[in-house]
Image (cartoon, rainbow, N blue to C red; front, side, top):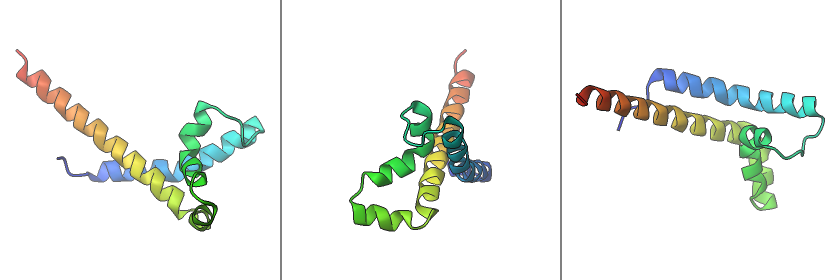
Length: 98
């Protein structure tokens, strides 16, 4: 297992902070917050996930913006780690093959 490097953490943090702003800008640009679409699902999935919880739990979690931010961060960090792992395996396979 590869350890998480500093670049992955910084990229994940930057994307986690930017994602809610991009989602809000897209909602304002398209005029409909509840409009379905792949872009809304990709950018607003933490809120959609929290909305599926019981009302009391979801309300408590949404009192602060920290929970969606941490969900974004964890997902982006996992994605960065997966890309690094695949990249390393591809390079290793390329060097082994004659």
